[in-house]
Length: 122
Image 1 (spheres, rainbow, N blue to C red):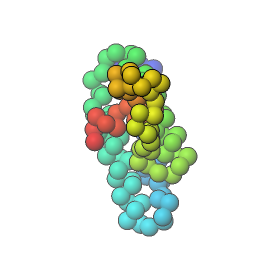
Image 2 (image 1 turned 45 degrees about the vertical axis):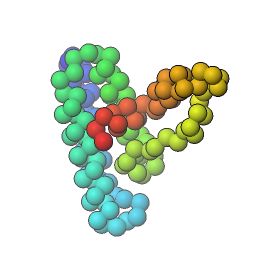
Image 3 (image 1 turned 90 degrees about the horizontal axis):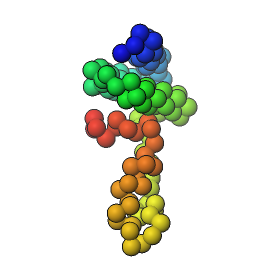
Image 4 (image 1 turned 180 degrees about the vertical axis):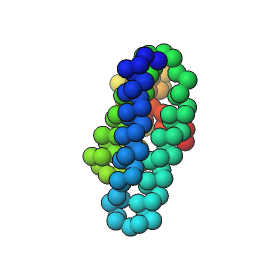
């Protein structure tokens, strides 16, 4: 990992923990705030530990983009948990005869960047 990339990754990691330390839940309840803070820290530790041995610069860049997207969505909506996507069954297929073949491919391409690692760790 290049020195600049290493600095950027550490900067993202520190930013996440600063956000967690200052986090206040929407409900204002102390137990909800603590639970959400713990979730943010646990999620960050898990994902950074999982990806610490990556060497491919393109894959590292994708992980950093996902991290930044999740941070921005969390700050915007004030919800630390991933926002689910709702796609109706067969809602993406264009032709009925090839619907089943294309459905998995279309769903994979329609998945937002901030959910790339969510299925792997949950």
